[in-house]
Amino acid sequence: MTAIENLANQVLDRCASTNDIAKYFAEKGLPHGTWVSSRIQEAGRGRLGRQWESGEGNLFLSILVRMDNKNRWSWIPLATAIGAVRFLSQKFPSLNFQVKWPNDILINGKKLGGILCEGTSSGIIIGLGLNCLHSPQALNQDTTSLTEALDCDLTIGTSLADEVRLEIYRSILNEVNHLNLNGPEQIRQSYEVWTAYSFGTEVEWGAQPSVQFGRVHGLGESGELLVTSDSGNALSLFAEDVKVRRKN
Ligand code: BTN
Image 1 (tube, rainbow, N blue to C red):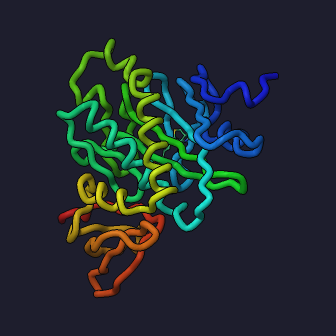
Image 2 (image 1 turned 90 degrees about the horizontal axis):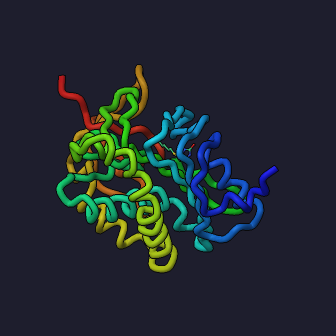
């Protein structure tokens, strides 16, 4: 049997979920910044209990982070999205990357990647799924991949995950380290640049039959989304699935 430590900082051929492996890293006391990636996940998980389709060719990466300042933990999902987009915009300047609160990565409004952060008693696990080659269908959401957006041929697309893995890891870790040392100001500023929900964007959230409508006001103290509902209430959204409002 493989000792879990041997999987640290490795790209595996397959596993159930890289987030689960990173949780073991946390329990075993492995250091801040330890990562694991896999070419295929057999039980990839998304936010809100959803499945994350994890076929070969896309990027699946989990990073263990330890931050002493617990007040800043709630900013980790946005720090991750910003770190990823900071790198991707430099690498692929022709593409229009956006951050969709709290932690989706978009190109022109279509989902390119998602982030699942999971807290454990001994650390936080950041899980990133990035559509490099395929764009799996998602419920109520248009999706895309780097290969599609770059309009590149499949032979190039096949190696994109390998090409971006370590640099995206470094960029995310830099952003998280910066958050830990200096607080969320840099995230706030970068969010203004890349947000898919600028001030005044009309959004909807919640599930049928109680979908709510409102307008975005910005980010609160903990990275929560501030909105004013159509009925005039100022609300703070912490983990809801928020969408740009559909025009009927
Ligand atoms: C989302 O729902 O948008 C978040 C998707 C997160 C998927 C990544 S892939 C690597 C890590 N391992 C998992 O099982 N999930 C995350």
